[in-house]
Image (cartoon, rainbow, N blue to C red; front, side, top):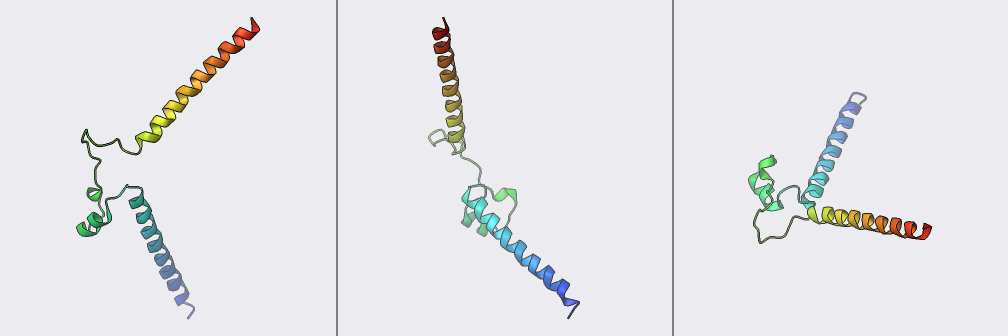
Length: 95
């Protein structure tokens, strides 16, 4: 009985690893980093080839990643404009 404790621990770790891998795959698929559920299950392969590339059609909208980057750039420009306006106001008041 005492020798089986090590094996039971290994089996428990293996089960936990499988659960984590399934959850990670689900999260990656929901973020769009893996192909759809049909393409991954039908190909049977989990290689990078099963990842669907972004479409380069001009009529399609930009990927979702660019929208937050554009918002951040716009916010940065707005902050810089506000800082310049504030500097101007301070300079005008000190004259």
